[in-house]
Length: 246
Image (tube, rainbow, N blue to C red; front, side, top):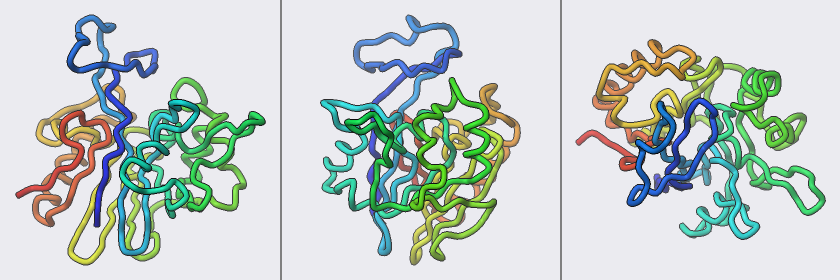
């Protein structure tokens, strides 16, 4: 399997839940509001024998009237129309912003017209009820009743090799993925396991739905990943998007 991090840049985010661009070489974190977190935003492209997979969809920002995630895909030689499956860990705006785009008539359309989107039904219902500022409902509402959406009902396996499991860690209906092909295992922990440093330390995040559960899951995954030689994908890690134990 081939993995391509599709970085959309580095940002700070504080209690307002607004993502503010951050230039590592010139900006000072101390000048941002107290409690600001420094994060990368990077969906992942995974090429398997069966599929062109996209894991989460980024912020949905556009540059020169084109979705940034589309530009990032094209930069690694993949057309957005080639994406066959979109796997959604959850629907927070920094993970689901690129689910759709607004067309010339002001209507939202799915960003990947040939892909099947895999979304937990309970997560969608929760997001639509909860709304702003964590969820941008007008961006994800297009998923409702759409024939390209495969609604997931709890844990399971997609096409015999993509395993999904609801953790209810970072958010009430958050899910994680294992992609297993031949002797390879790729693990995507979404916001339960967003950065490598959190895997190595006992860390309880106040912004998590169940921070202690996330901490314990990270410890479990880190140890099992070492034993089974997983490739970890870190959505919010600035320096280490992909990691594998030697």
